[in-house]
Image 1 (cartoon, rainbow, N blue to C red):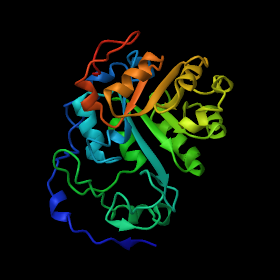
Image 2 (image 1 turned 45 degrees about the vertical axis):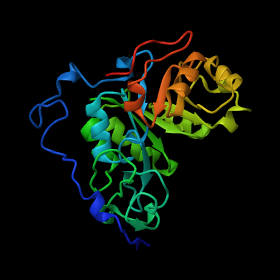
Image 3 (image 1 turned 180 degrees about the horizontal axis):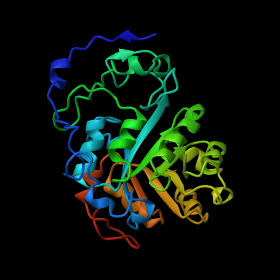
Image 4 (image 1 turned 90 degrees about the vertical axis):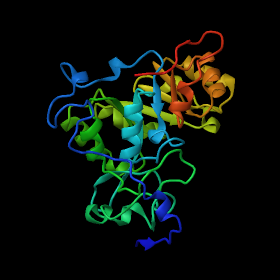
Length: 295
């Protein structure tokens, strides 16, 4: 059941960040292949040695898990990977959303899984007042819409919040030829094994508490990215880096000091809520890269 939550700040979020659906992200005409595609979609092979990931689009800079936020992160060019979360509606439609309920980020209340695709179109995101800039209340996208807009133009990362929808997500990715362009993320090693078995790029995230007892080397045969908590102990991050998993990326980084520590310990990717902020601060510290992030 969905209940309306009264809003006192609707006028404050009525400012519009324009989204022109008829234009491609590459600046060409609708239907033209973007120039950056070359002979096919961008894949993980295009990533720099230390990629930056815009977590939920960069949740301290844009409305999280929104089309306008993902668009802004793409256009700013301070991250090479766009991250978003996924849930499943009552009718099986995969949508872009973090929480199990609508309450925190929309003008409605109730469970996401209680809606069908038609009802989903009536939901409007409620941008946080603390975000820089002006943002409008907008409909949260479906996974298919995000894949269609960004797939192959930039590497994507999606987290599976409802593993029951994994097969349908895999179908959406495969149908668009994006199996080497989308990381599929989970906190559950067994779900990660399923993701790998479906022929997708597998990402496994672990909390600081989990990393204390984890043995990451056990996962190296089926995990493409180990996504580690930046708040973990040095010894736990070092064990993850030495696990044999090729990519060990730190989450969720919000300061330059957090980033520099993770890179100094050997992490080779940064998942951040503030890609724009980090881009203004060169990396410092022994054994780390010296360039700022950029596309």
